[in-house]
Amino acid sequence: MANDVSLGMENDTSLGVGNDIILNTGFNDYTLIARCRDENTRRTTFHSNDNNNTTKKPKLVTRVVVVVEVVVVVVVVVVVVVVVAAAAVVVVIVLVIVVVVVVVVVVVVVVFIVVGVGVVVGVGVGVVEAVFVIVVFVIVVVVVVVVLVVEVVVVIVAVVVEEVVVVVVLVVIVVVVVVVFVMVVVVFVMITHEEASITRAHFSSHGHATDLVKKLPRKLKRIQGQYQFSQSNQRIPTDYR
Image 1 (spheres, rainbow, N blue to C red):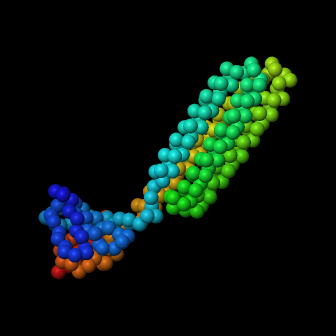
Image 2: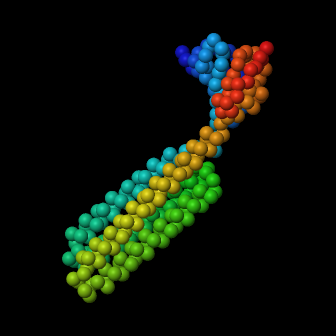
Image 3: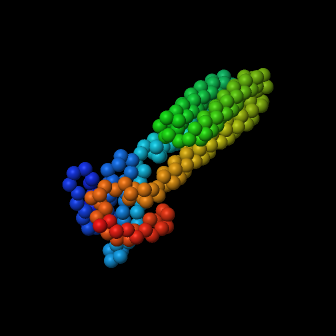
């Protein structure tokens, strides 16, 4: 508490001397932060903080998506190794491919639900961004399912021509890996875009210090000095006596 002083507005009010002074205006959705720059001229920079819950960053959603996507990539890599090792046995190949289909589809659907619902409900971002995320995931799910189904069909048909089984499996697996990689990139870009949008919205909600000063209780209006409002770049001489 050497440099940080809080001023409460409910009962008794006292203002301490320090470099950083936090003035709680008593309103539920605003906090006025006054940062003293020069004690001689009492010139202060004000920042207003919008403390409502509409600008929360999707930290939990981001972590869940990253973990799920890493799991998907690891599963695909393991499957590539297993299929290559068992490429000579067509039955094992088919069984492994079927397992891959189930695992990847389930994982993709889980990611779709977590990100879609999380973005729409938990994050509180714009409807356009949320719909765009959901549409992208629908497209990714369709592409992954189609590729994996085609892979199963090709491998089953390739039983007749055993010589090309290994080549076909490797080619299709490469396609699946590429699709999963694209899915990872899309998710990363979308989540980053959401965080950037929310951050911009958060900082754009600042700059209401002029209005807040007008709303300050009369107890605070005894404060004297010149104040510079950094958001509007205006110096407003005030005398609150």
